[in-house]
Length: 94
Image (tube, rainbow, N blue to C red; front, side, top):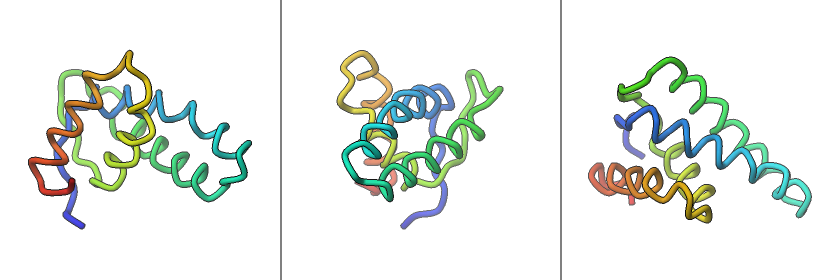
């Protein structure tokens, strides 16, 4: 896996907020390891993007990938997931 990649903080933040809604669903459906993994990714993403309006954050691509996958089902934030996909493709992660 590549080293950290730069991603706009707002993209990371919005996807983390959306992905956090998926944690309970995964727990309720009997996938505690998945729920834990998402919880860890959300925590890191929110921590890195705090007070970074209009800036980029350096973040592990596996976190960006997980957040993108978990938040992609919400059409209201498509612009954020699309932006994340561009960065993941640009750095040959996807």
